[in-house]
Length: 493
Image (tube, rainbow, N blue to C red; front, side, top):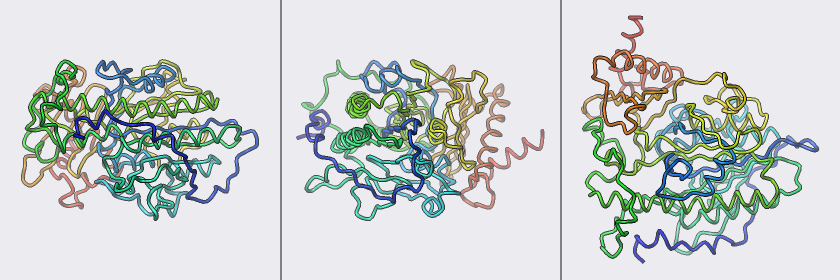
């Protein structure tokens, strides 16, 4: 069967296989209180889902009823950003509320620092914080920091700090679990999570269940084996329109070196085919999200469960003629962020700037767990009850060792340092008037004050969080030109 067909002939019957709950860590010493009424927590994370890839976000090219139902029951945050548009660094941030460079993670398949395993008091993570607070902490599906599916790794006991792992169906004969198997295994992950939820009926101990899906990440297969046979092509009438910024200028020669992944030489119909497939894969994972949500309803646990839905990063989807991630443009950095459950206003749309750093403190806040001082993020919970609650003015994202970004209410500033003698570049975009990032304002004289304010914002954040980008002692890892520019600005003030 050819690739163009495989995306759509997904047999979900196999996901109803028997599921085993396989604890991989010792039971917590902190027993739950009798009659514990704290809410259950369900964290659902997809992979490579851009924030606009939901019908509740106004996208008419796909239907996502499960995601839409969460938005209807809760609040959707329209300005949510990944800390790094790549799987492992972003997922490490979600679990620790620290920037990836603070964790020493800059590429895929790297492990959390040893301290997160040996010293959870001073280096807490999602599982260890909830486990020590008396929650039962369970993980279903993808991890990728570094093991993709720890439940299938014989040496992965304790791989995810503070979590027991839910087993799901065995790897199929001749297959291995790797980056491109979401369509094979997401259904099984959903079934494992649903089965666990049903075991919690009548239990007094609250639980934290993390459900991690791979799709729509399977779109990477399209880039490896783009359909060539005309018989495989999707009828044009069904294809999404091209993005408005398909041919937008980017930041220059550096883009061809550091903006991953594919598509620079594709023709326009191929981009449209890719978007069609991407949206179908998003609908597939929406179905699996629906399985988990239905299990909560069937178990009568929905009313006392806080659900947070997000993704690790987005997808360029043809914008700037780019496909994939590892870009600091909007399409790759912006992700879904939806909260639903007790204490969350229904049908809300919030435009505060939110980061992947905020996942952990938000969940802790809803569970009544004190926020550890090491956490970089903020809880969004106060935003639901206090219109004047203090909030940040900017969010930050990075990629590679040489790209940094700050987003404020109206503007986005990007700094890219030299790569093999390529030109150092600044970019400043007015996202209110130019959401597709098509006009770089960095060289416009009237914008120099805005540009310099964003340089200072970025510098102070990187300095505060220990990024080598602003540490002259880091040698090649530091952007000495940027450091000098900002020091001159600060000296002038």
